Image 1 (cartoon, rainbow, N blue to C red):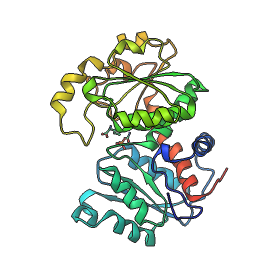
Image 2 (image 1 turned 180 degrees about the vertical axis):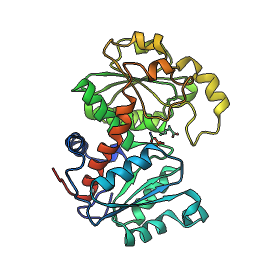
Image 3 (image 1 turned 180 degrees about the horizontal axis):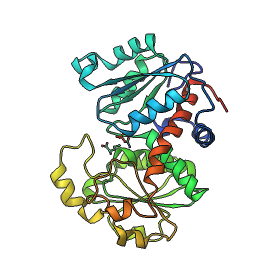
Length: 307
Ligand code: CP
Ligand code: NVA
């Protein structure tokens, strides 16, 4: 995956040894206990490249890298030559002369891989049209905080089944022996190849169209109906309407169930105010954990364990 010796890319959960994912999460929990205690990135700089908007990813990477002692340069959309046609591989080569690690949020997945190929520094996936692995590291961390061991836990995803956040949940499900149920209209189901690959890796994943699947769920999770790369908002709103997470749906779940959402939420669409602001919602911890999880990812990419 990389010619970077002790340096490593964080591109997709299914490309990384499961033991390494467990180790990163263990470190994330430790770093959260003492957020300002470890400064292994002193003298180092991270470049953050955003070809799409961001609130959480941008702030959590900026603040997290500074907490680790390093400096940050953030490059957005049309401000950089990438927006005028410079290739991602060339961008990677150039950035490698200035900075020590890079994160990119982009559109097509191949651009992420081209950046990683061109760069001699570690590259982190900060979301593509296809996946969002940093989000899922924070999600699993949050789930562990609330539920402990995730083995056999019933996780029910409702709404858009062809979704980048869900792809990373599908990738991580077998690592924690999670029982993942995807509830979506057939028109927005996950790609078959993704499910087959996950099942080969031992994932317990099923897909159906019935929101009553939320019965006895330990985790109820959703995402926006129209992602940043989707251009078919009309049909999505029409077909996803029955999959809103409301209080009636949460009542079907286990009494101790938690509600998760990567945010930003579209209140009144995929989730009601009552649920996202309710007692079972852990979305603000989930957002905060982006920073702790990514600090651990950065340390892993750079080959350091500060704790
Ligand atoms: N969840 C997430 O990635 O949020 P942003 O789009 O605000 O970065
Ligand atoms: N699925 C959403 C996630 C945002 C963090 C999107 O891609 O817009």
